Image 1 (cartoon, one colour):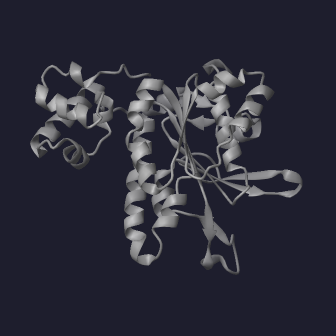
Image 2 (cartoon, one colour; image 1 turned 90 degrees about the vertical axis):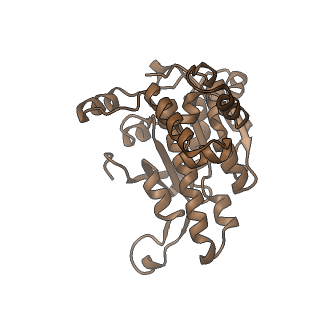
Image 3 (cartoon, helix red, strand yellow; image 1 turned 45 degrees about the vertical axis):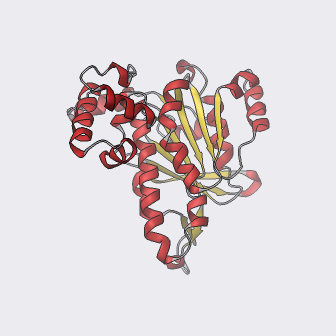
Length: 301
């Protein structure tokens, strides 16, 4: 079910000075307020603890963040729209396609095909609901310079879609460092609301953080920032009823020196706990890719 957007100017019981501070801080709708932690709301607007608490309580009450039974939740999951990947085998592995209001993570080494899947999803997501799409636009956050408009053009053309229209419906942003990446996601609510975004892609989630926070002494800070970053993505997915797809790199796994996979996903437990579904892509013979579900609440591994 889609939320009817309510602007902060529509909140009649909120003082005009507070509304003005919210607007100056970039909060346009009550949805953008609802997903913001209270300490962050206070920091960005300069409002008091008491005012922030009352405001959050009010907007979350309007949106209807309420208790439901497990049966109701089950029915919502069963009836939720899924995004086709364009591959019948991958769709079956995912239980029908990419889940809405969730984070799907594709993990693999360089050249495994993570970015290709992301670009294919940019095309399939724009197809109508009855054809397995989401009928909406895409926000593509490119942290490694892997996005290829030409590849999007070719995929669209191969699927008998209009390449120019497909490209027009992809909102693209290139991120050059982790601060920029965090900033883009923090401001994403405004773009999602204005452009009716239904798919958010971050390719990749971890690259800048690994390159900028080096050494054990920086690990705690890196993981804290990464945790906040990826959970904001999850809140955006849940509140705006869209899909989030992220890619992740691999790193060496010293504990599996003799037995097991010598590689493991980067990002540690922070990324592992935040991602809803984790899929590992491996290269095989004759340009074939093997994809395995390595973690999911309900998909078999």
